Image (tube, rainbow, N blue to C red; front, side, top):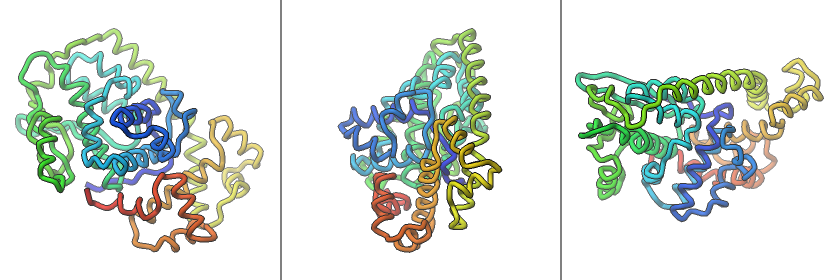
Length: 348
């Protein structure tokens, strides 16, 4: 299916990013290098209930795959998953009474975890498909993110179901199989069921009869309390997003026009530069941070969706020379423009 691409307005829960860095570190990858590659710093990850740009997670996953040389890094990270990495949604799902409730809660509150994809529940004769659609055109990131998330669902939720056999009949993946045929056994080991590639959707294929099977530790009272908290978080996020969404939209337009500046942004938003500065401070943001995020967004799109030369992309983004652009891009993405372009292509 066609997916929108990530943009600088998309965010992800800090706790999930921290969990992925911790999992990668446990596998021997240097945490400091991964942190730098993501474009984040330790202070930004100190608040596990905060949010960071989803583009940072995309860079983190792609660099982790490159450094580790593990073609199944997302799948392997899912084996270390726990509910805490998914914030309040993770705890709500732990308190649910049935698998159907878990899926419904995921659909209802997943935006509290990230903006990088959408969950659906589809029904076919005798089975239900617990689907996830990734919102990215970066093939490498989407592949690892999909295998990671489906693996997390299995690790955290499916194995909570009382009794046996497992309700999982198969795993469907939109992307193709790995180039090394011997890796197929690893999919079977982690997912514990047949895995089919090049499918119309990426999903856990469940026995429809098991959707209402009881989970191990239901707690309806706790679930109710956690849902109230989740609703408050959603309301707070929607209120605080208003200014930043407007600022992003206007600055993105100015960048396309080649006229971006702090003064012009303030003018298009109908406020003074001083008031603009105060608004950014209120959101713990800055004009420079937003400008860099949007320039990086455009750079990634030009590199991933066109065949324009690096020099041309640099000129588009108002860099005086290509080397300045390459240094800037590597500082903010952890990759050179050429490396990013290769990672965005459909090759494993």
